[in-house]
Image (tube, rainbow, N blue to C red):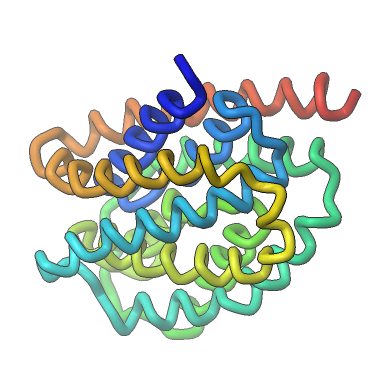
Length: 250
């Protein structure tokens, strides 16, 4: 396949994952950009933020139309992550590629576990301080690794903040869109190094896939979706760990 065709196919997969699961698309975006399209880790994390922000905003619109977004909670969650996202985005420019790749591998494995262990809400009121603390952590993760953090945001909304799953996915997309946009703004000085001729097609099919992902989530068992996605994440994590140990560290 040509690089453009690879970008189109990979973007569609990312969009489907983000639209169906409320997160996880960014964990696939960075490896796809690195291993399929030849981006360096730093360029991939920067480009990923554009794809993730645009795709999350598109998927958010679909969930909002269905009334499945907790706007006030999502705004609090996202606001708490703004400064950490900026600070982590600046820090990531000074980190060696091997460290970025290794950190991403670890995050992919954690994401797989979080997806598989997704639990029902515990009930009880949402505590603003707890929501802000979790939001700050997600913002830092977004800024540093170029991931939206939805794979952790959804479990946090459900298990820690007692948000029903029906609303957690849509609310997660609001948080992802804000965090990714802010983190990208902190990296504006690095955008010249990104091959936007490939990022454009990738983002375009990701946007289309996000709409289909919402419909897919209504037709396929969530357990099946999570199982397939977790298997993919574990594969990505293993590959990137090997890369960090034997390639970028060499």
